[in-house]
Length: 176
Image 1: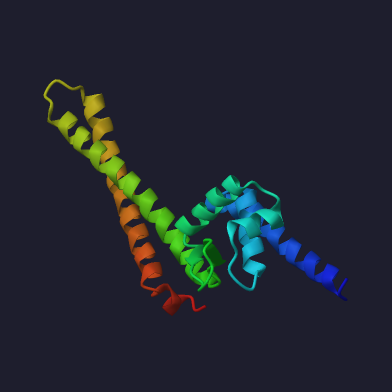
Image 2: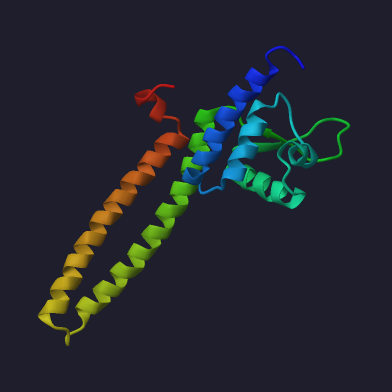
């Protein structure tokens, strides 16, 4: 065995385990985190077979995990002359990885919430237009409308924050 290989593996494994434990922040399982960590320390692209051999997971599980990482732009599918199998490589710029993940997840969340709020605002406005509602219901609807407009202000702010990540303007305020 090479001198220091155990120390190297221990140091890498510590980081891989930390990444695996934190993947729930990304909505991923620890096994996806282990895969990402493994790929991060690889010096070149890996096939699904390489990943399966290293982690002892099924090829189906590897494929699903890699697809999740590709969808989040944390891993790229790469091409290498003469290689017929799909190759994957970690996106090593963690700033860009965070930006991609953050914008994908937050744009989706903002869109879902804005859509629900706009639909509810229309329903509440329709409710207020009715003549046979009680003062109590009318006051509650007006209060809800006010709360929902405040929520829309927040989501508009959040969209601007996401814009600052996508444009990289955020780095003017918080340099890398």
